[in-house]
Amino acid sequence: MLKVVVFSENFQKAERFVSLLKSNEQDSDLTKLNLETKYFSTQAELEIRSFQEPYVEGSFAAVILDSEEVETWIKSNSELLLQAEYKVLFSNRKELEATLLEQEIEVTYQDLEDFKGFIKEESELVGLSRVREIIECAAAPYAFNEQEDTQSLEAQVDTFEYLLGKVKSTAKEANFLPDEERRQKALDTIQQLMQHFDLD
Image 1: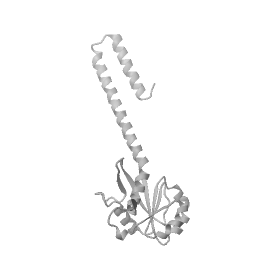
Image 2 (image 1 turned 180 degrees about the horizontal axis):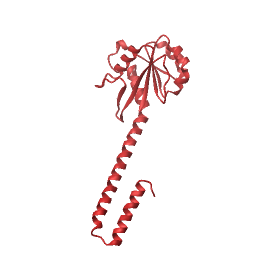
Image 3 (image 1 turned 180 degrees about the vertical axis):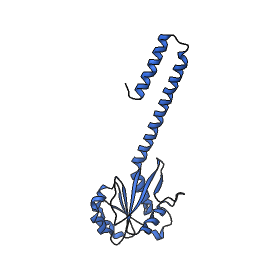
Image 4 (image 1 turned 90 degrees about the vertical axis):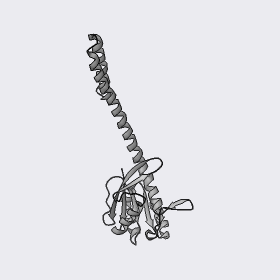
């Protein structure tokens, strides 16, 4: 599951940001973001961190909420941000973009106080809409891995159920078969079980 870390100087602002990011969801849990696209559905784990506690373990996507100290914070945490799979700064100050391009941090603009829903400008998603789109892109590999794991598990269960059925039918037939044929069927069944469990 993708971890999305929202870095902010102001905890209330971060909570408001996350609740607006989830505004099209019924779920009020601020630690999970439900992602539904036409290709997959999954969840991302959300975590709010203050600028004073920037350490993050493992892979993550970073969402940075703008503040007066944001440029200084970004420079002093450049090593941490290098580890982030995706980085986006959410701001209402357009002059920030030029200074952040060299850090590979995308900047998207919207005033939280003016939020009226997810929007597009000139066919491009902006603000919270763009942040959500970035999180969906970051979550896609995790979602496809989860789907593959589920499909793989279902296939294994189907195979195991087939083998279990074969053991039962072999046991039932054993009462009515000559010794040699019974032994051969039992051997075939044991070999299939051994192959399934990688014991051969």
